[in-house]
Image (cartoon, rainbow, N blue to C red; front, side, top):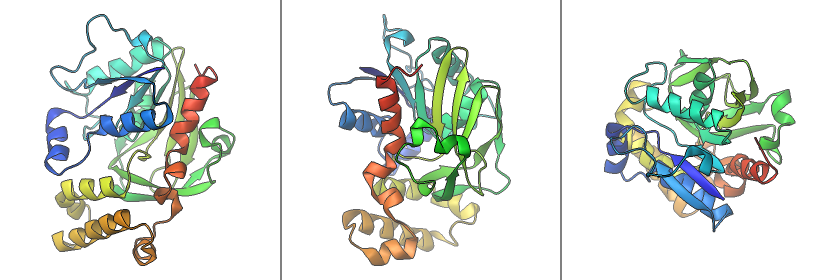
Length: 279
């Protein structure tokens, strides 16, 4: 199989991640693909960069699936970085290439199909999205096969889906964001997307927290930089030693995010659906 991985960050957003030791978001998705399908081919695209297009002679229809990373962009403020990505998502819909992704991807799936997003009036959802609950449609959806009806997940976003387009099915939500997962059918294609980040682990969340400490203080998530540093240290200690039940208890973290199998369940279910002919 052949997959297109779309790193949706603009150069400035990617530079912030790089400067704090975050893994390139496209590599997180590449690693998930290769863990499940070691022989799969992967092409990484960076549409918000000057050299972000596909290689000559490669078409969207050459791919079995497309995977979207998160982004630091704002989808309800279209600009030279955002508009081409919306066009890309629509082109993938038209080409009937199944799409999957996290955070920005959930907003992209909705906006490309005619829905809308806006800044969340409850502020930023960061660290852990708590008590994500499957809807009736979600409980019967193949993306959530083997997943608990209520769970926590890694997250980091300030915007949210406000209006679902025709052809979208709401699969999950929580008190912070009514839309935490969708299945969008549009123009002949399908896009399964989650607002949270199954591709993250504790170490990745620690690096991202460092990269966005000032922003998180501004949103009231930490009282000061020392408070944030303690949180980051706890994340790294728990990542290094998952038996540290004291830290897990203090942070309210359990198998929902500690277990790779549970965390990646939605992605692996999407892969299984591809194998069964998802279109």
